Image (cartoon, rainbow, N blue to C red):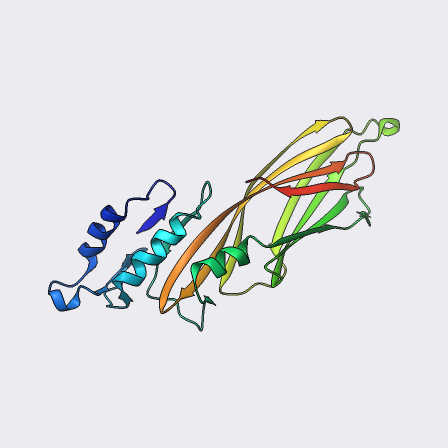
Length: 218
């Protein structure tokens, strides 16, 4: 079951959860989740904990964000946090840096590097591969490719680059890069998969390839 920003009704949520609970009153404090292509019939969650975590995560969803509960995640294969507030602070803690050493390969492709440090724990590396604007050789600026990946891959997190586009303005390339960072989380014996939609706006000088700025679009 997936929960996104449009889903905020606690009463509806409780009703849906009870579909997955056992038939007897003694089992109402536990639930079994159906997730993905196969059904997982395990009484693995405390119902009140799930409702509390769902309400807290729902209040912190951005555009494109969603989450699902999973019986498959625990402290061995997920990032463990004491509470939702601790996770939100972690994922929203960013430090952006960029490298002024623009590298050129033998066929004239220049690479500009950016890095987004997340939660002071790992980073997302972004490489802009481009041909620079060169009027003398009738070469117009072109973004050949954008490659983004996690610097420290881990089973508890996964990056998926979705799309990019760019426009030229006043000697700069303004690049929009979109993707999603999926976390496996574990809160007080409850497993959650959280999809964090990311949108970066990157500016590069089209004549030198020098990085001008990188920000995250809310």
